[in-house]
Amino acid sequence: MPRFTVPLGIFLLLVVLLGVGLTLNPRLVPSPLVDKPLPAFELPTVLDPEQRLSHDELRGRVSLLNVWATWCVPCREEHPVLVGIARRGEAIIYGLNYKDDREEAVNWLETLGDPYVKSGFDPTGRAGIDLGVYGVPETFIIDANGTIVYKHIGPFDDKIWRETLLPLVKKAQENSS
Image (cartoon, rainbow, N blue to C red):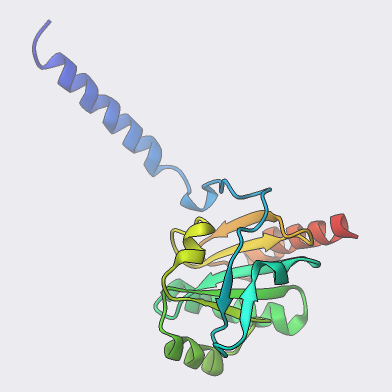
């Protein structure tokens, strides 16, 4: 057998695996935390460092936990959708401000609107890491028991909200009644 056969075979296998990987939708990456309790965290809030946001606050009712940052361009695209959801009362939204500057985050909320009941300030990203965040924005649907029922990776628009996320929120609300 020629010496180049094994390296050529390995190379071709890697090309096939890379080709398959490029066809996958990164937003469909399953989260190992779905159907598991929201990881414990306690953070100061963006608007008032004396106030805290903890995982316990997200129990008792269905809510969204939206991971966002001012340096995130897709977060800016998604933000008006979140403001609309909050204004219409379609969901309770909490925020997790990820690896950001507090002053810029406060300015963002004051300028663009604040859809969050509270937004935790996570400058080191530790809470985000515990949630398995690897990019922003990411949005979690949390049921009334504090269990993650769904994770949406990337920004969402009104269509994704109406067709995917809102039905899941309503289903979680029905299951908690």
